[in-house]
Image (cartoon, rainbow, N blue to C red):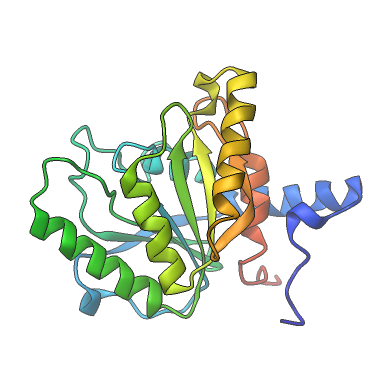
Length: 227
């Protein structure tokens, strides 16, 4: 699109980078409110804003990342019981961007029918939501890739939805091990048609990568309202 902003990773001057980081900071410092939780496709709210969805295993740290991005401790509530949340949660960010917290996948105790229902609902959402700009696919940097993760990547390929790998809990991994993990995940991304050719390494605890991720997501937001 002609009005598409230059992606954050393609900015080539410090001045542009600083401006993008500030734009991301201002966006995520704005109001952010939970507006709806949908358990069925027929319950989805009208699409009025660009959407960014967050997907990942039920214990990957999705809620923590959303809270870290928005600077709020309890906006998205983490459950002590992985896989308990089975709905799409919508958060309105400053009337400029919709953040969508997708239900965690890979919950071992769930019945097969529940897992199949999850996959069907997610695919229908991904394929039928034209304003969905990107899915942030969270992977735990401390552990090996799981079969469920690869299944979801294939699901995103089939739905033709752009997704970006986001490594979480990177503060708990030594630099050399993290570098190897990033290299392996980038190689994996190259094997998937819908994957972005880059990733984000983050930590909700230390703040690693949070500023940069805010700047990346800000490129999809509607322009700020002029006062």
